[in-house]
Amino acid sequence: LQEVAHGVAVRLPTSHRMADHRALFSPMPGDQHGFGPLMVEQFFRLAGWNTTRLVEPSIEDLTTAIGGGCFDVCALTITQTEHLDDLRSVIAALREA
Image (cartoon, rainbow, N blue to C red; front, side):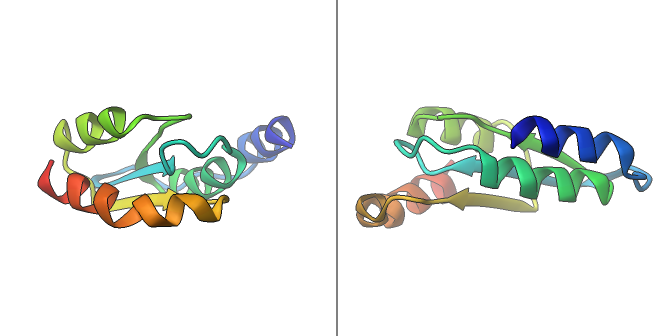
């Protein structure tokens, strides 16, 4: 599916880059999926956003990425309900970073 998504993305026209619009996409730390963040990231990128996508990040990877840049959007995806309990603390750590 990821190869299909990449194949489709390269055939779609892209908008002009909007350097002042940045977005970070990532699965929740501990969650091992990547297709959802890939799809959303590609739509934002095709719309002209500067995007960053993390794959299987730790909380430290996320806070380092957020602390190292200014993002208009930080999107976390979750597929496992057991990670919902940690969501509040991850969001707090991202806001602090």
